[in-house]
Image (cartoon, rainbow, N blue to C red; front, side, top):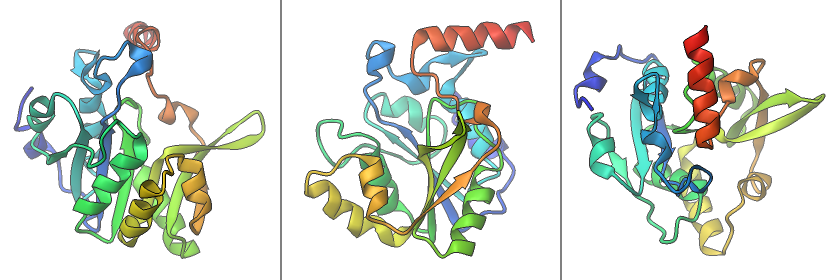
Length: 212
């Protein structure tokens, strides 16, 4: 992995946005391996995500609990969970909020290599126009708008609120959203939110891309 990757990316117009890439999970559905480091088209999944984020944030952070040195090779700050026991994505949200120095924090998972390159722009527009605390992406499935709960943009001031929620035993994303002024933001392309949770899914998309 090349620590100069970050230097090759153009500057983002979203200097008021920090993005944290969530790579701190246990990868249970992938046999316990570190999902962000698995290869697609010869590159780790997180490398695809970082490339798509390069124009969408002024600052990029990575949340990881394993192989921290390998993630650091991308040239971005890497932070482990501050709460023991792999408590889930909200622990990564909290790490991002605690280290965020911009008005906004966006969150994305490390296993979504087809990430929408307009994600931050659309979430930020909805957040500002609605005066909400957090914007959450949705996609339509069977006529229903389904929340894509780890694709969010939130205001930095939520750090204390989230810390209390976690200390009180909360862990579900949807329940936390219910305590906030949240706006749901529809996205037209479901493919942009495909996450590769299993080795079979990773292999299937590797074959599909090779055949295109």
